[in-house]
Amino acid sequence: MRQFSYKKIYLASPRGFCAGVRRAINITNLVLKKHRPPIYVRHQIVHNRHVVSDFEKKGVIFVDDLKEVPNNSVIIFSAHGSSPNLYKEAKKKNLKVYDAVCPLVTKVHLEAKRYEKEGYFIFYVGHKDHPEPIGVLGEVSPQSIALISNLSEAKKIQPPQTEKLIVLNQTTLSLDDTKEIINCLQYRFPKLILPPNSDICFSTQNRQNAVKELTKKADLIIVVGSKESSNSNRLRELAERSGIPAYLVDDESEIKGIWLKNIRTVGITAGASVPEKIIQGVVKYLSANRVKVEEIEVVKENINFPIPKEIHEN
Image (tube, rainbow, N blue to C red; front, side, top):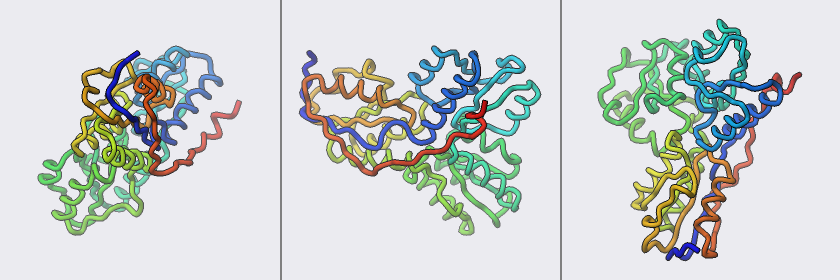
């Protein structure tokens, strides 16, 4: 039996699957029932190694380029959103497309198109090379939008106009993540406006708020999530900014005993793409010595996004 020195484990709630991820996974399972494998998915359906591996075993093939997909095939677009060019390319190849995009991401796509049409220049706050910003930037003319990834870029950006400026952002960034950048832009451009409703994903904010509570009780925090997951990385960074050591792991096999030396209390949370069974595997591993596990619930999430009707149709 593993001998750990800590006396208590705090388990964050909410954690793991958000409504958008749950919807994307349900869509993929339904498409698998409706069509024979292979089924193609552009990009990882969600950013989690275990979820991707499980689908690969069922006959799903993940690709980053539609050139890899044979004509007349079935393809699912991931939860992160896709640019219009991908739909055009899919149409040329006669692909049957199912879109698993999160409705909150769709909202930002629609906002970008609407504000461009109304003559606004858009500051889009997000991470370079992440599929969500790539999809949003693909919706509008390059002359109408600029990607801002950090405070330095916010200080230097020179938009083509000083009137009709608006800021949108990647949904997996929290209010804390975007605060400095947006404050800088508002200071530089006093007429800058924000969208009527925040584009921050409620699940992202809830999970970050839960980590803030963990940092008040835990000497160390384990974040369960894959390295590609933006929101999982932000959870780890948030804990570290609070002065608490934090580690991002895909599952219990990546936990190192040296991390736990002289630790009295351990906090556990998980990114929005992590299945509960993987989280419980980490909890079981860390509670091997019958350490007490206490759940800290910040807010109860009970939101579900509907599945498109056409997926249920025969």
